[in-house]
Length: 82
Image 1 (cartoon, rainbow, N blue to C red):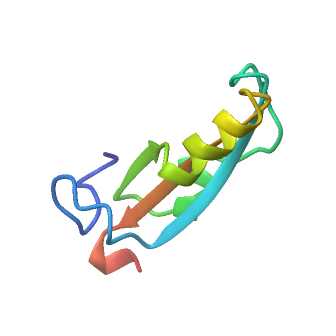
Image 2 (tube, helix red, strand yellow):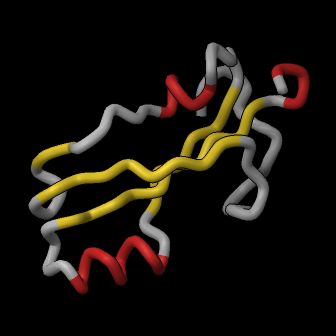
């Protein structure tokens, strides 16, 4: 949580403003792209960011034996900064 946080409370993963995949190779050892919560917040002073593994992320990682390992980053901004 940055500042006073975003608009969703607790573990409600259904409400977010921005969602993006962050791709890694070799079990997370080498990032393929530059994605950060600050980048996705686009200058907002109050936001909540979560980096998670969705079912699809885990499935793809298992199918490729960890060679491709995506993470999902979700950002929820405060109501006055949307």
